[in-house]
Image 1 (cartoon, helix red, strand yellow):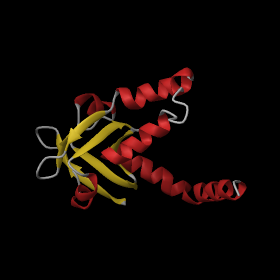
Image 2 (cartoon, one colour):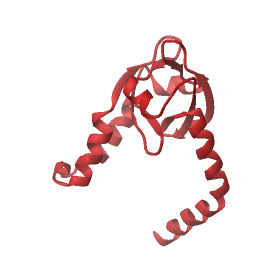
Image 3 (cartoon, helix red, strand yellow):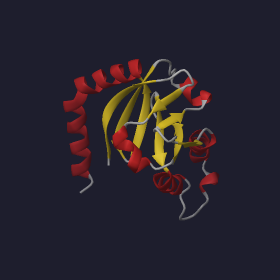
Image 4 (cartoon, one colour):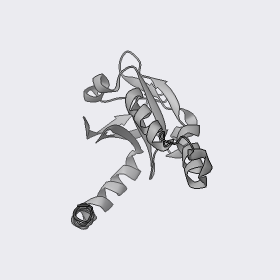
Length: 150
């Protein structure tokens, strides 16, 4: 399971180091794609296959008939990139993804169970502060949703 929060520097060649605790689970190749909010998502190859199947609605494989699904799939698949983790745990984030979230000097690398999120460190701080203020309300809302699904 990928958990934890890490702040890492982006080096002069635009590489960031994956936290040592993540490296074994991530493997040698990962998929990096635009995330939701102001972040990037990183998936293992195996997890990306699961996400891909869910997004393509593999049961009917007619996801291309639904406009919202087509557009979201373009967003996720069209800007996704397969990236290798080098021998010392660094990845090179493609410029088009780096620019999307305005990564400059530092990146916040967040483990979110089945994926890693990469944030501009300032945007992450703002997001985290906002969520912390609303944590009780969010928990209540999620608890109510879980109860209504039973």
